[in-house]
Amino acid sequence: MGAKCLFRIQINEYYNSAQVHKELQRRVEAHTGRRVGPWQVSAQQYGSKGNVRPPVVVFTTSEEPEKRYFLTGKHAIETDDGLSALLSKIPALTPTQSFMVKGIEYDLVDFTVRVGMVFEKSGPTSNVVEIGYLPCSIVDNCVGLITELMDKIAAPLVAPQDSRQDSQANAAAETNYEFRLVPDDFQKVEGLANTPFSMRHTAMLYSAMLYLNLFNKR
Image (cartoon, rainbow, N blue to C red; front, side):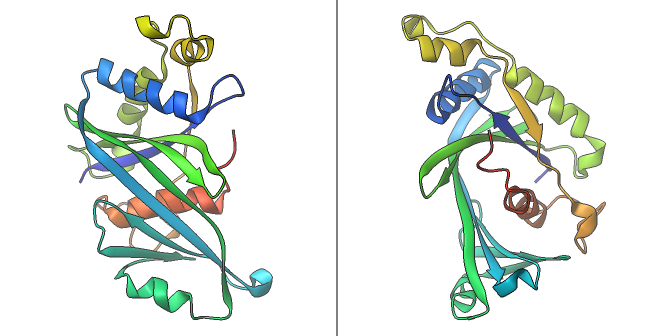
């Protein structure tokens, strides 16, 4: 699988999430990224009444559609779809917040790059880039290399010819995007610290966006 980092792109009022998504794809392709196909993840958080227990997050991904990842407190557990049905029947747990990420996956030499838009109930709210480095299995050993690629993707390119008359598209193309590395918190979860990267690690990265309420912040 390779170690992964997740980056949240900070956007402003001058351009919307769809424009940023299109521009990020253009930049990845300019760096010789080869389009693989669509990609999707989702996360649903459940809270207990009075917040007396840690929140529970159920993570799903198009890479493993038959599986569910259950995260709470110090635990990250692989399970199946029966978990979602079970949680809906527990009176003490209530769905609180959720999001879905839809986007495109690319191969770029030894990297896997996924560019996605974050959707809430109200629609698209922000953008993320997930980068995996296949020769590396421990994030701490390659976070610098992964961030270096993110720096290149975030750097502006000359606007495409067909967007020169579109001020918003032109601004999106010429912007040096600021980004934030989503903290992994692997040390806090049993079995994730200093272990080869797995889908449980991926689930933890996206769950952190809910725990820290990052998905709807600009």
